[in-house]
Structure formats: C-alpha cells, structure tokens
Length: 106
Image (cartoon, rainbow, N blue to C red; front, side, top):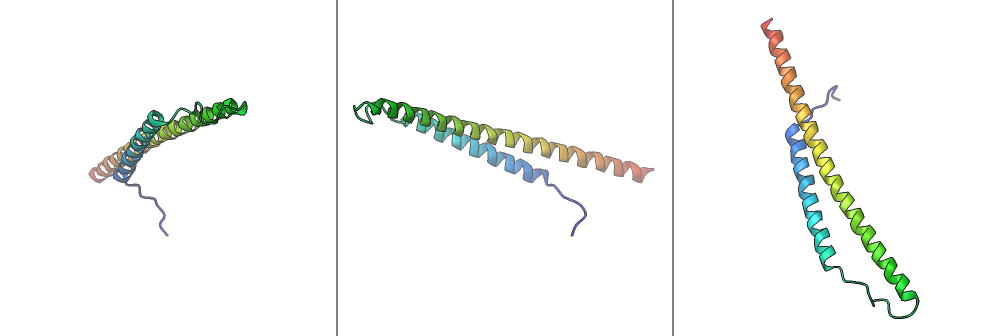
C-alpha cells in the first residue's frame, strides 16, 4: 500500500470537459423537450376534475424541467471545481519543483 496519493491534473481537466459536454447535451435535450412538450389543454377531457389534472400535469412538467436545469448547473459547478483542483495541483507541483531545485543548489 502506498503512503502517498498521486493526482493527475490532466485527468481532472479531461473529466471537467466531460462534465461540460454532458451539461451542454442535457441543456440541448431540455430545450428540445420544452419546445416540443405538448400543451395539456383538453388532454384530460371536459369533466370537472380535468382542469385540476391539467394544472397538476403542467406543474409536474415545470418541476421536472427545473430539476433538470439544476442538474445541468451542477455539471458546470463540478467542472469548475475540477478545473480549479487541477490548477491547484499544477501550482503545488511547480512550487515543490522550485523548492527541490533550490535545495539542490544550496
């Protein structure tokens, strides 16, 4: 078992790009669904409970789209966090390399 952890910044950056791509794909799908989602008016008939059913259908659809948009926002935040972690790893590696170099010169 190893006593240290290795982090590959390039891998973190690749994962961030995958999150961004997934977010763009999800956004496109949400937009297509929203544009093509049929209006529920009249879908539940004309009996008195139909209006309440239509309202519930519309509310459920809006809730689902909002939840998907929040998920899409998470993709962006995860990507930003991964990119920041990669940058911190690179900075730490550079600082450590500089410190080691200065020790060798001493």
